[in-house]
Amino acid sequence: MPSRDLHSPPGLSLEDFHYDLPRSFIAKRPVTPRDSSRLMVLDRAAQSIGHLTFGSLPSFLEEGDCVVLNDTRVMPCRLRAVRQETGGHLELLFIRRRSEGLWEALVRPGRRVTQGTRLVMEGGGSAEFVERVSGSTFLFRVEEPLEEYMERWGEMPIPPYMRRQADVDDVDDYQTVYARATGSCAAPTAGLHFTRETFQKLEARGVEIAKVLLHVGPGTFKPLKSGPIAGQTLDPEYFEATAETCQVVNRTRGRGGRVFAVGTSTARTLETLVDLAAGGRRPGSGVTVVDAGAD
Image 1 (spheres, rainbow, N blue to C red):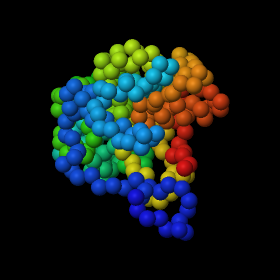
Image 2: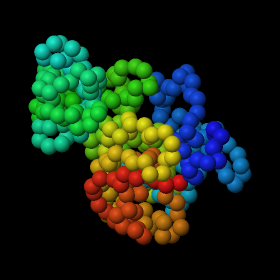
Image 3: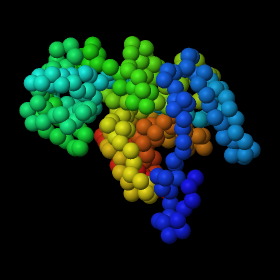
Image 4: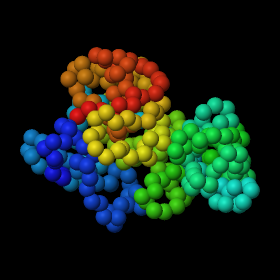
């Protein structure tokens, strides 16, 4: 960690999390099977570090614990397009439906989109620029149903740091094995390592499985600002949590078991439920709280 100015505000700063990662360490493809990915285990009591594979995860959980997953499904929401007037090429990343026929999208390069711009998307679909929502987000009028169109012509929105184009393998690889409700513009990546066998092992150990839904939004692409983390905000994201899930989590905590949130999207949903109902978690839906959290 970098040294800290004695006069700087107390608490964690974004700079505390900076580290160098050689590009050669960034995988362009997932390993097969999924649970053969690496797993680092930090044992606080023994002050030791173990290097295992993800398939060994169930051995660290106990009867009475529960695992909470985010069962959102990623949309193949990246579409290529050209400007109808000039033929200039653009890339659209549709992130959410605003209303019937109106969708928000990230555009690259955004400077080429001006009022009245009409686009022809790959496959022949059309999109018309309506207004700029924010610096990088634009509102388009499109032909519905866009979801069906994306399923046929869209690409999976794999992370740009992979430095390659999405292909047919990513349709399955960039999706959890338990994905259910379509609506995310990025995968809940912590869950990509789970396999059917992982769940069988967890259930055999008496670990309960619960699910929430959070559609990962465009905020996942927006970096935090430099400086103190406390007080920064995160873009709101749509979530749902059922009565059954809340009962499992509350029951686990009530008997002293451990609740394992798989990934930040799951953790954010559980934190929002606590915010909605202090002292316990109640079923609900809506948008998440936006505070990035205090130290």
